[in-house]
Length: 258
Length: 295
Image (cartoon, rainbow over all chains, first blue to last red):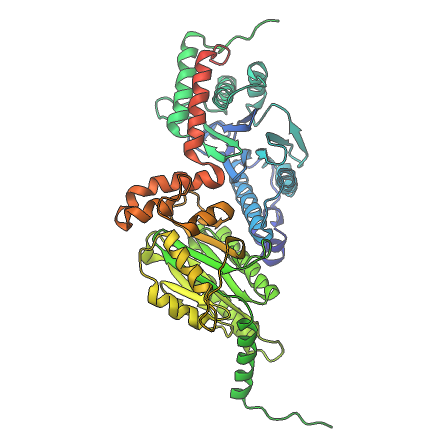
């Protein structure tokens, strides 16, 4: 990124002159991302909807990307800027790995993302914010970790689970009631899809599983074996199981009162 | 006042070329061979940290001999060029041909500039395609020319001798293990016809493997895997991936053995799809029993 800044600064998101505008620009926004850890890894999932005001701009947008072999990033906020930020982030990690011959530490990656979000602050002030969720497997500590960000690039590590985006309030509440420390990989995947279902239930900008069009959330798993995106068949199985149960119990599983 | 002597341009260039050639000839050689699933790089290099062979981009790798600081410079330049290209346009648009051209320009400029000493390096840039016919190997000597090579290439100390040896013995459709053994044989021949033995610790080996499921096809072959490949009987043990399984099958069946290859290869470095699937399935069973709170 330093090289890019010196060599062709126009390619960097932060270096563009901003036109003065009144009010917010209408651009597609991505919505809800959730993550949860389980012993041995972490799952990161996102819904598939992009909205532009009250219009659904895209039904099948992909908002969760591998950052490198051991981490992934899910994006909420202005889709165009976010996708570019992820592209640059992926490039930086790969570039570092090739030049230095070693991967960045997970902390290093998280800090780097923080700087990139901060460089977008000008745009964010005009309503084009990008707020990602970063999850990865820390090979030094042998566990999955989640980092959440605010619009100014402030970074905080989340323990257990986290959510970002417009539906994050609902998703986080759902995960809070569902999350258990000793989840298996599949249970963790089910829990995040449940959380996305709840977010879609209460937030109009979040898309639920689209059974008719076979559009399901993107669920990714990062373990010591690396990044893996669940296949459509695997996710559809989880989504269908949840859907079946919700036909009987529309509000989802009930937690114990005490 | 001293007047500089007149030196004819021919003489000046010849001197510079000789200077560079001598520098290169002092180092150990690197050989690059095509095999059925890609391109294999073999270098004699006792160091674990200072690499002679490295990744440039998805399908492109780089090998060099000569002065370390000079080719390291060129390597980083190449990685920058490739990453910038790939970011500006698309990953598809980064090609070995483009990269080799940039290297040729750089080396040529340095070679003919009177102010600088010529680089004492010789490079190989290789790209793996979807089929063996699409593989590309370029050799870039110190003076900035480009040589488009096929099959096998050697650069470094006794490159001529090694090339002749390789040309006689290399054939299309070799397995990884066969190609690797041929490369090591060629490297272990002395200038005066004698033989040395090269152990796995003295070798740096990497492949560009078109069957690798990841986008980035470059992979170093290290430690145990390398020793197994070098011992290389076609039944060298169950863990041994690709090459040995194929040694028996011959090239006709590569299609069939590809799946096994990919899974096992992935298993080696990051235990890919298969292993995780198994785990996923196990997880599923668990969750079926106690899925109460989740569903």
